[in-house]
Structures are given as structure tokens and as C-alpha cells.
Amino acid sequence: MTITPKTTVHTLLKEYPFLLDFLAAYNPEFGKLTNPVVRRTMGRMATLEKASAMGNVPLNQLINDIAAEVETQTGARPTIGDSAAAGVDPARQEALRQIILDLHAGHPMDELTERFALLIEDIEASEIAAMEQALIAGGMPESEVKRLCDVHVQVFSGALDQHEAVQAPVGHPIDNFQRENQALLQITQSVRKVAEAIGTPPDAAEWQRLKPSLTATIDRLLEVERHYLRKENQLFPYLEHHGVEGPSKVMWALHDDIRAAIKETRAALAADDAATAVRAAGEAVTMIDDMVTKEEKVLFPMAIELLTDTEWAEIRRGEGEIGYAFIAEPIAWPPGAAGGSAAATAPVDIIRSPEARLELKTGELTLARLNQALNVLPLDFSIVDENDRVLYYSEGERIFPRSPGVIGRKVQNCHPPASVDKVQQIVDAFRAGDKDEAEFWIELGGKFLHIRYLALRDGDGTYRGVLETVQDVTGIRALAGQRRLIDW
Image (cartoon, rainbow, N blue to C red; front, side, top):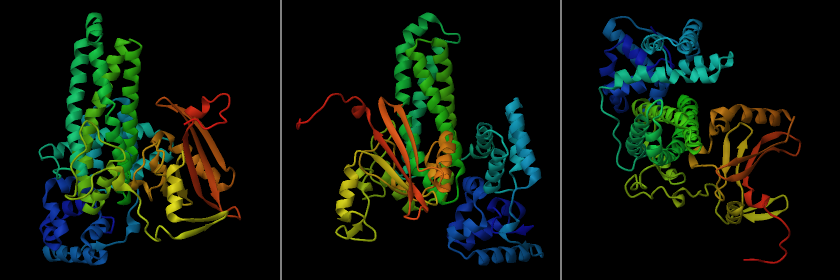
């Protein structure tokens, strides 16, 4: 076997099982590998490169010490290679493509799950992601690749069903997510019971009797939006900081499928379309229940091992910006910390004092006064740099959710997967100098929103990023006549 920085712990332990005891004694951080849940989740994703960072051990030292232990135990020293050896195997790429095609053709899930499990057995998560991305680049619709998520979950779930769920302290972000899931499953169960009572095809009398109950229960499901928004805007950015982008792309797309199913159900209820309402409601709760499984068995175990307590505390401080689903605001975590209120997430002046003066093109302002002005502008705006990283978002009038975790995040990961291509098109046109502005207007939640993207450039025209503004112009749009006097 060749050991490289990209070799996963899973692959290493499969080849040399005796290394489990060695690693557990080698570094306290690696002692977590004695937990089967950790080995089956983090072990599949963690490379030796990541392990060295997690254990604060020099990478070369870690690899050489592992090789020395293998030589001691087996009498043969393994080859040590570099990370350049890691790449996408064309044969595996084709095997993955065929699995997706067979998934689309309706082959039995058990057969596909077994094939997929064998395919990924000896490779790291980054290669799986690279294969999936290569398929998309080769023309396969992202919606088809997204369906692999169900196969992923079945592969992991079988190994994890026998183990207890991840445990987190009360008030910890994972505990908050889990308590929301418990409440959510009760609601989906209620939806399912009502839909089953109405029947397929719907019984007219039962439909009339139970339609109000189904409507009320589906309306309760709307709260799941805050659960998903916290994942998208709080948890996913931190996973991306650790090189894990799969959940933020695949799960966000699945969130949007759930949103669409709930929207279809509510529209059918409003139109008194019993058959569509029952079908769409069933699809919605099935997807929601599956998402709970994905979270509890894959996402949360992975996140709890990847993220540090400091990062979890930062996530917790930002939760109040978005709010909670089905539960009251949790107690403070860590103990003694401020709760998840907006005040707890107020920006901190890092480099200069609030009274430091900034020379601007048409005047001079202190940092304190600039922050005051930015925070009362009737706009929701953000600034992205020339490398597509988010630098700043406004704290004033908030239309779309934002939280501190977005700072430093790739702008492409801040938008739903369905709109990423439009964002990329805008950024590419700005960077090439072909365009300086893109403008949209939409109706959302009873509001008429005006959205603008503006290119930021130096005096010589060098591209420096994007300013995105969102304004609720519902009231402006309705103005008529004149107001020339103060009317408070």
C-alpha cells in the first residue's frame, strides 16, 4: 500500500487494522477512532492531512510514524507517496456514472446501494465529490447526481442503525437541531395520518371533514424553514471551512425540493384539489423524514467531530439571527455565554477603535459613524471580493437571512443550487469587464423586491468584487401623488 497525505483513515485501518490501537495511543484526538460511529463517518472522510491538523501533529512525522509501526508489525515498510497521486480514477468515474444511470432507470435500490458501497470502500470523500462534479461538468444534470444522496444515506445508515445518536450538551447547536427534529417528526406523522384517512383516491366526505386539519398541520410545517436556514447559513459555512462542501450543495438542493413540495401542497389545498394535496403532502413528509435521517446519521456525527468548540460557540451566537423551529429559544451555550440574540452577534471592531477616522472620497467619517449609517440604510446589502469571498453584510434592514458564518464564504455557496449558475454568470461577466450591473425584481412573501448586483472596480477598471443590494420596494411602488410636508 502507498500512504499519502490524501489516504483516508478508513482505508488505512482496513489495510492495517492493528493501527487502530496505535493511533488511539498516539494522540488523544485520535482516541475518538475507537468509537465505531466515528470510524464509519469521520474515518471515511478524514485524510491523514486532516488528521495531522486535528491532532496538531506534523504531517510528515505522522506518516513516517505510521509507516514505522506498519514495518514493526508486518516486517515490510509501506511506500510513502505524495498528494499528487490522489485523483479521479477513470474506471471508478465510469462505475459511478453507470450507478446514476441505473438509478434513473429504476434498478433496485438494494443492488445500487451495494454497488456504491463497494465503489467508495477504498476512496476518500474528496474523490467521490470530484467524480460527482466531473459528471456534472460532463453534462449529466445536477438533479440526477443529487439523487445519489439517497444511496449515500443507505450505505451509511446500515452501519449506523445499531449505534446511539450523537449526544450534545443542552443548548449546543446540534442539540437544538435534534430537538427540532423530534418535534418535526411528530408533525410529519400527523400529516401522514390525516392524508391516509382522506385516502387515495380521496374520499369526498373525508376530504371535506379533514381538509382543515390537513391545512393547519401543513401550515405548521412551514416552521421547518428556520431549521433549514440555520443549516444553510450557520452550519454549512463552517463545514466548508473544513473542506466539506458536499452537504451544502446536495442538502440545500434537497431543502429546495421539500420547500417546493410544501408549496405545492398549500396551493392544492387553496384550490380544493384533494388528489394533488394528498400526493404532494405525502411527498413532502417523506422527504422531510429522509432529511432527518440524513442529518442524524451522517451530517451531525460528521459535524460534531470536525468542528471545534470555538466554532460551535460561534454558530450558537449566530442562531438568534435566524431563529428556531418548533422549539423556544434554547438556554445559553456554552454555559454563561450570551444567548442567540441579535445583540450577541453584533460585529466587533477588530483592527481600529470606533473613533478611528476614515478618509473617504467625499469626506471623512469615524468607524462608529460609518457603522451607524450602514445599519440604518433601508437596504439589505453585502460585499464580495475579487476572489468570490463574502467580506461584509449589512446589519440593518434584513430581507434574506445572514449570519456571521457567511464571512469568508464563497458567494456561490450562499445561494440555492438552482440559482448558482446565474450568480456565476454575473460574476464572470463582471470579472471579464463585459457588464457592470445586473438587475432583478421578484415577488416574495407578499413583498416586491428589487435586487441589484453592481461591479466594484479600481480607478483603472480592475475588477475588485461585487456589491449586492436587496430592497423591499413594495411601499415605494405604491406611492402616488406628492407629500411635501412632514407627516409623522
